Length: 136
Image 1 (cartoon, one colour):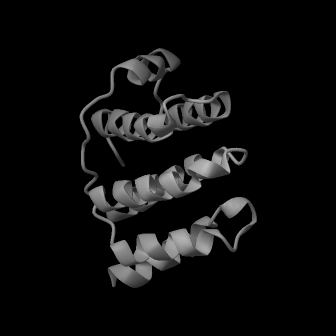
Image 2: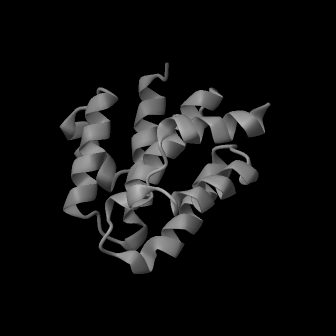
């Protein structure tokens, strides 16, 4: 399991991802707040992170990196109304995945398969299978 520093880093990374279009929309804020609660991060710490990001901490566990990538996929697709930013979001997601040390083949496959799922949300089991295939 990840420690507090890693949890804050994960959340800070997600906040930075949400800010790629300059503003965190209410729906994104609520999603991120839900993730914060799952990570046992207080609302005060969460709100502080919005204005004061912490340094990125690389996750050692491959499975934790996959979970974080899935969170970013969900976050990217949470704002369905703004389709103009989907290509920008996909590029940003791709770069975040690479920075996490995930294989570019897996990331590319996830981005490609997203189009075939309702609301572009890749189910967790499909996502895990994609990364498991590339990891082995």
